[in-house]
Structures are given as structure tokens and as C-alpha cells.
Image 1 (cartoon, rainbow, N blue to C red):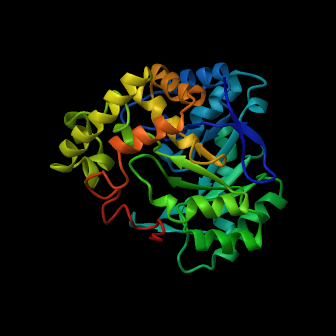
Image 2: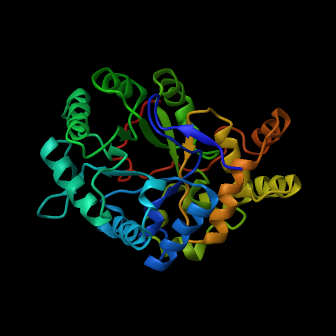
Length: 333
């Protein structure tokens, strides 16, 4: 049975798990609109009501797939809580930079709304913080979009707890998105706590460790075909082999518990706090069902202890980002 959680203190009640729509682009391998629609159909069937996307996922491809899905299924919009993001852009030479100005955020949100065929998003994130702009100003720019009726709530991706507190003093922050899983525990050093204190949802992306916490982790050959992962420290040798060997213990434990490894990883996250909302992405309906099964998996204290025993804090070999990937996210510990 689906669990439900609030998207922020005064926000909507949504499913405890969402759809991470980066997988609707080709980021983790080739996909098409039909596969994306199949995931959204499964979401409706299983009671998953939250979709998380961005203007840059496939340079609009993810949002376009959501838009054609909603257009083909009258009434589906009312069943979904939709979040998108803005703030990452490129100059004339193709160099990435961050723009949190109201003009940029509104222009990008307008394009997102057009692609999805909707009048308003339920949540608008700043995807990456502009370092030379006070975060209070950035929060105010997001708040202006709420006042204009183009968003119902605001959020930030990959910011520090101290930044969250400053932003929340300007306007209630419904959600902060951060990588959080059994393989990435840094949010427990302040972000999990700050979100709980402020009534902010902690939206956990990559909750199954970019496949490492599943029964079928990406093989070396598949990793080599993916630009992001092939340059990611955890997926480069010798780290990848070490991480696969360590997570074999987790897969064995999940099998002993009678559940898919992905379901156990999701259930573990849901047990970390009532405000934690994982948003796994997948191109497979079968795998999506495994992920959603985590919402119905009740873990005991003994189960949690056994999971911690096979995957203790700090088990992963390699950083979660390389030097270039770290440009933008705020490090706080």
C-alpha cells in the first residue's frame, strides 16, 4: 500500500516515492517517449503521484514526454504533483554557468510550462545556486513566481543546511533535493536535521546509488557508454569492482529478506525520516515496480541494523562526483 508524505510543512500530500524523470532523457542510456509514458502509466496504477523533472533533462526532452503524456490522458494532470527546475545555463561558447535571476528563472519556467502543456508547476527548484547572489535574493525570485501563479511552492537542489536556513527566513522552502542513499550519507551531517526542523521535504535523488544498490547494477561495459558515469569516481576502476563486491553483500541480504535489493534501499531511506521522499529514475516498468515495492516494506530495528552491518557508513570507494561534477553543489561537511 502506498505511503503518503507532505511536500513541505504546508505543502501537498503526495506519494512517499516519486518518479525521477531524468531517466526520460538519454542520461542513463537510450530511451523513447513510449518508455517514459509506460513509467507514468505504471505510476498512476501504483499511486505514485510525484514527478520530478528539469528544463535541462535532455534539453527539454523529459518535460516534452510528460507533456505528451498529460495531453493524451485527460485528467492525469490533477493526479500528479509536478516539480521542475531552472538556473543552469550556458554562454555563447557552451560554458555552463548558473543564473538565479528572476528574469532567467521565469523565462525558463515559461518554456517548461509550454513543453508540459500546463499553467503552473507544483514546485519550482533552483537547480544550482548562483554563488555570487545572496540566497535570500534567490529565494525571493522563486517566491515571485509563486505570487505570479506559475508555481505553488519553491525548492533548492544541492544546497547546504546553512543556506536552507537563510532561504527559509525569506520564504518557506517546500523541498531541498540532494543525493541520499545507503551509498551517499552526507545529508545526515546536517541536512536531514535542518529539513526536519524547518518542515522542508528532503527529496532524495539517486536513492539506489545509480544502480549499485539494485539486483542488477550496471556492468562495466554499460558504464563505459555513459558519459556521466564513465567519469564518475565510484564507477571508475578500481573503485567500481570494489563497490560491486561490497554491494554483493547487500544483494544477498535483500534476497534473504525476500525482497528486491532496490526495494530494500528505498525502504531504508523511508525509515530515515517522515520528511524523506526518494525519487528513483528508471526506464523499466519492471524495475519501477521493484522500487515502489519499497513503500510497502516494513523494516524492523533488527533489519536496519543488518543493513548497516553489510553497508556501514563510508563503505563506498570513490567520491560521488569528480572535480567537474562538484562545480555547483554546496559542500557542507
